[in-house]
Image 1 (cartoon, rainbow, N blue to C red):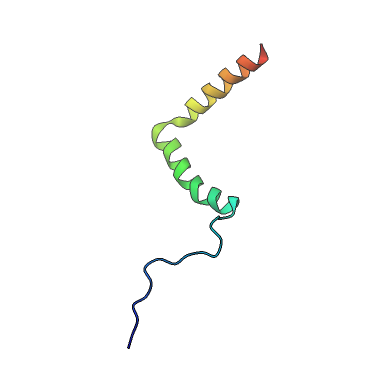
Image 2 (image 1 turned 30 degrees about the vertical axis):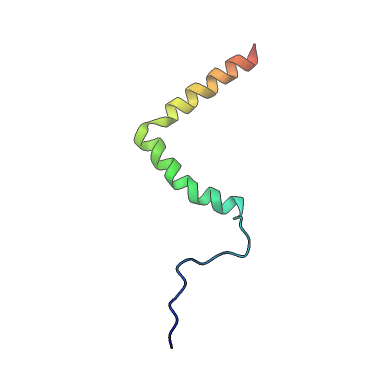
Length: 55
């Protein structure tokens, strides 16, 4: 008698390494920055924070 394969496999630990999570997120983040022109917004916000901290 054959048993069906499990639908979901579980990992032994519930967490993934931070570098793996970063590698998964970076391509999507890069795509969003390119598509929506978010780099200018990041630079603008960073410079505003820099000005506020410089006071």
